[in-house]
Each structure stands twice: as structure tokens, then as C-alpha cells.
Length: 100
Image (cartoon, rainbow, N blue to C red; front, side):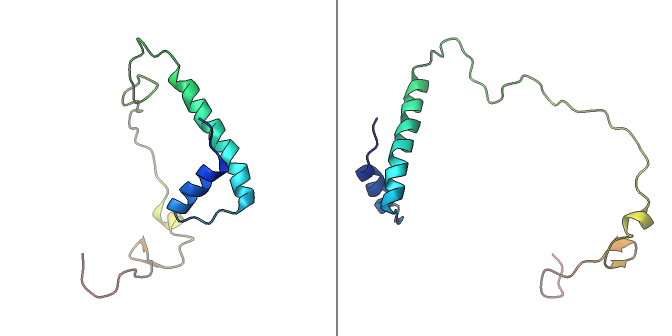
């Protein structure tokens, strides 16, 4: 399917997009190329190919949990601009004094 500058202009107008003429000249052949490629993909024989949502058959590939020592609290809080009761203190983001 060949896309013309007039088609691109019409679609741009429908979408309420301002489209300078130089963009129309550049975009029309690019869109035509995209549609030609999509038409080529339609010709691919997919008979016998199972539909998939993922190219690999792996399921829940997870490592076993391992207990390891974590960063000491004092070291984790060392660069915090403010801290209170062993936690990083941040400015309030919600107004009011009520909870959730």
C-alpha cells in the first residue's frame, strides 16, 4: 500500500497535528515502507507454529533464597540527610495530619 503526502496530511488533520510540508515529504515514504514490510510479514507461513506469549518455555526461574549478612544500619544511614529512630526521614508529601 502506497502512502501519499495527501494521506499523511489528512490523518494529521484528523489527529489535529500541525505537519510542516517537509515532514510530510519525509514521513509518507517511511510509512509506505512500514506498511510494505507488514504486508511481507502477512505472507509468512505460520502453519504448525504454536501461538506463544513468550519465546522461551522456562517457568519461574528463580534462585533459592540464601541468608546473607546485610549492610549495617549505621552504614546504610550514613549518607541520609536526616534520620529519625533508625530510619531515613523524608519531607511530608501529603498535607494534613491524618493517616491513610
